[in-house]
Length: 389
Image (tube, rainbow, N blue to C red; front, side):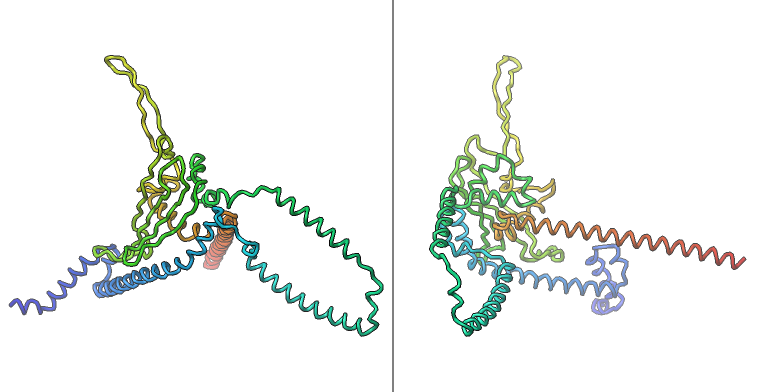
């Protein structure tokens, strides 16, 4: 009997419907679909799960590629650190920076010079063939010109020698961080003396075999504020599916972050505000002074377990900040120091504003056209009524 019951197509269909009903609890819309369509939705979800597994594999392999290239970047980043901290002085050749546009224009100029030189060569050949005495008509005082050049060079050299030459690039990382739009309101006046002591900010990727993560390392000079010379914040990435909830996989999403403990010296903790209060004993009348600590806004809250909330937001703001530091700010720090990155940001804002204005104009034009069509329709309806009468 049991075997016959199992083979009963109606009971099998009923069992499938119950299974579908349990698996598809997502939306009322899906529940309203026919059973056959629900089966197809289940098939799509199964495909999506397999795609998520592939995406997870892609992320792990991409992390391996990042780790490989991080090793290749390391000599450049080390040279950057040395120049900033006056460990290494770049040569004149290393200081000859040209943008891509300048190099392009110089190539064009070189081509023009080659063309002009060819034309001049043809003219000189013609003159030489004519008489050969062209130089006799002109006298050149070469010695005077050389002396003038020497004098001007000496004067310039004197000005350069008198100019102040501080070691390395002072306040490099403080300037970089202050030029980041999201960080500007977080850096307080009392944070700046500490951030001036930054010698380097690095990104360290997790080792092979470890959970995917990246660590932001802030290196400081020995200072009077805290005993740490290294402050870290680690962001762990979501790199595999959760068995209990496989579908909402979001690729390279940050799963959680962990900060570090700052060993503040006494009276130097800029994340706390200390208030002294006097308390009087109810019976004896004696007075004692009590100190209470209250949290205070500071950039160094970034290293706390909860991180920093931007504009009163949630932990996603902290995740976004960590991602931007890793991807854009630290690798391109000189562009934030020089302000080039700010110009790019401003251009992006202008483009966004212009797009919004353009969209509004288009929208207004469409609305005006719709009103005109409605008016025409009303006029047509009135004409039809008149004709019917």
